[in-house]
Amino acid sequence: MGFQESINKGASYLLNLQYEDGRFEGEFSASTFPTCAYALTQLEMQGQVDEKLVDWFEEYQNEEGYWGLDVSGGSDNEATLFAQLALMEILNTGHEEKIEEILSKVPDLDLKLWIIKIMYARCGRYDWKDLQAPWHISTAMRIGEAIMPILPKSMLANFKPPEEYAPPVRLFGSKAFNEMFIAEQYTLVPLLLIIETHTQKRDHAIKTLGDWLLRNQCIDGSWFRVGLISLISLMALMDAKACGYNHLDLETSIEKAYEWSQKLRTFDGGCREAINLNVWDTALSVISLNFVDDDKYDKQIRKAAKWLKENQNDDGGWPFSGLPAGGLPSDADDTALSVSAMLKSGIDKHDPVIQNGLKWLLRKQSENGSWGTYRPGAGDTSCVSVTCHAIDAFLDAGGFENEVEKALDWLRMEISEDGYWSDLWLAKNTYGTSLAITAFVKAGKGDIEEVERGVRWLHKSQNPDGGWGEDMAGNLKESTVEQTAWSTQALLMVDPKSSTALKGLKYITENQKDDGHWPQACVGIYWEVIGGYSNPVNPMVFALNALKQETLT
Image (cartoon, rainbow, N blue to C red; front, side):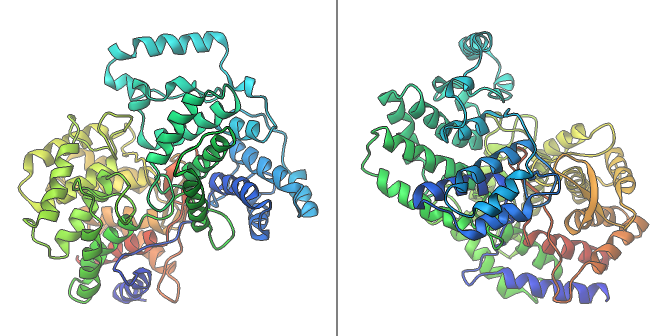
């Protein structure tokens, strides 16, 4: 099959992922943590779990008796302990023979992570007292809290609760809490509420934490549109209700949260961590279809751009998932991609929707020139891919030379000694390196030393089959279409005759299915404690981009 034929078939399949309202959206694969949390909440809400959920635990347990963080495999102690707890709780409600067989294979493991300890304690299988830090650690924490007001923000951004001991409830509302990454805040509050309802049971603390959860619940019933966070929040509100917490919206909140949790279910019976990334999916699809053939797919591109425009937040940015009436915070990655997508779709740069998006990005650029996901310096880390996407947006808009130059200077400083750039959100070094190379080339700096070093690293990281692959920690593994595609495109942008890139193109075309799609892999990283995810949109857009890049030579 020729490259153009492969592109045509792939683009045709990608259009199957576009909805009537214009958005593109792929269904994530399941992860172990939200699947376990869902099992516990389904037991509490209905008194039993469905057969398909038990089948999921059976299917994804490996030969050694472990579960990985996600369906990509592997063995993770904390995921295994969580799955073991869920199955032990299910055991007395039915499926005894099957569950006993599954549990018999689980190895003996010690509880270490405090989040999992809380789940065990909540089910009466761990002593709440053992969650408290020893006096010397507790004393050190109090001293740290006392001196925090005089500590530099860079140190506060690195503050992390201890892994083995639950943080004190007094952490809520503190300076350290306010400087945490936003997803960590949303995770911590319901866990603190669960601790409070099972230990001191102070009415004022329960009310303060419960009220925070109710204020921050999205209109669709979720919290942050994320599986584990929402399920833990649902547990916390049920515990608060049992302790006498009363609020006008409490019953409705619980009902909406449980109803929303049903949407997490995947075709194989598990639960995915995020409900979707449809802003990401839509923006990337627009950019890819425009790159492939802007005339042929003009109707679909304009429809998708209209959906993006309608899902812009009032502050000018975009969230990772479109939500009626808003409710999700804007992030720099989706804002940058959305601005680029709409500019490429033909929307004038002076249109207010574009101008507001650019202004949002300008406000969020860090002093060092980079972009993080949400808030510079507030528990948020500067990110290579987010910075590269912001560079793209400003290059597409034109007239932002100073901001682009500052961002490129930061990128030059971020290259590792081995010649790669590491990323936060997709796996891992191939993604960061490919985007950094691409950003320099688009900015007219493809001949600098850092690009040469990145190219050399990609050359030596290629697998024998012509592809690239690594896990969320950056360890090399079997090739994936996604990682092969973005690595191949970057190499072609530097050298259209690259023999390494040609091997990558061969891998891509050989792995395309008869109906035009490419198989998806767990290359997305939601949170390293939680695991990764696969998304059917990703292999499509990245493979199409790589193949189209080759035809431009």
